[in-house]
Image (cartoon, rainbow, N blue to C red; front, side, top):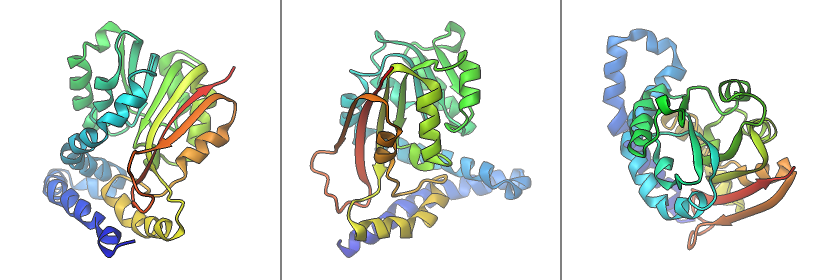
Length: 259
């Protein structure tokens, strides 16, 4: 693994600090109690980080998301870690009855609402909902959406890396939230199969997670989804041309739940 690649993410970290540090300090100045609320502080920092990174990440992964989401998402769609609502533009609205944006960072809700409204989705019409709970809080998701297994499609775009206890959260989402024959669609950066790359992923995660709201660089997310079991159809694939030497190794997946 080239030396530049080992330390290349320092460039991303520097951009994160450049765009988010001063706005975050400003909010601390007006609300000093944030210093005693690290989770809230992290959300504020990340909301400013995503103003810069969100459009770039969306553009770079647009082709993959079109392939993954547009032909498959249907019915009630739960977008976990909705960010700024970039997923909306990949939905085929003729196949979607409701878009549920799950985003615990309330500082991002305005952008989600703007994206949804631009696509013709409105809370007043009942075809759009924002949830501020985490993906692990399946009880709240079911309560708001009307009961057991209320969702036809779950979408996770670069989100499961920052969910608390992600392996448990994936199982709960599949068993309790996703309907039979529903689909789980994901695009995530995952643990490298190369031990020396995986070591560097573990090395950088404590620093990276501070700037990117708890994001872990090398989780075997795709394997955890497979291990849930009970799938009637499953596909996992990598990005065309992406080397396994890449620090941010990506995997996409489409899993259809059995009865």
